[in-house]
Amino acid sequence: LLDRLPTLLWLAYLGITLHWVTDSSPDQVRTRQLIDGVTPIISRLVGLARLPGGRRLVTDIASVIDLVSAPAERAAAIR
Image 1 (cartoon, rainbow, N blue to C red):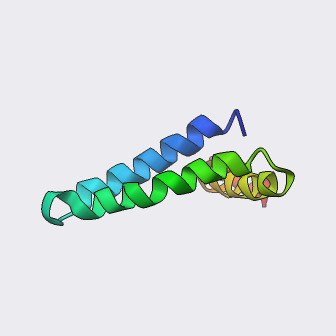
Image 2 (image 1 turned 90 degrees about the horizontal axis):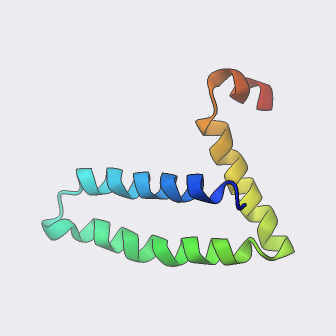
C-alpha cells in the first residue's frame, strides 16, 4: 500500500476537485458534504490496510484503480 497510497490519495483529490468544479449548490455545500463523508472513509481504509483482512480489501481497490488507470496495452494484459 505504501507505494500506491500517493496515487490513491491523488485520485481521491481529483475526484473531489471534479465534483467541486461542477457543484452548483450554494457555497459548494455538496462538495463540503462529500469531503466530510470521504475523509473518514479514506482514514479507515488506510487503517484497515494494516490488518490482514483489510489489507486484501485495500489491495483489491488498488488493483481496480490500477486496471482503469493503466495504459490500454497493460490493461488488456492484466485481464
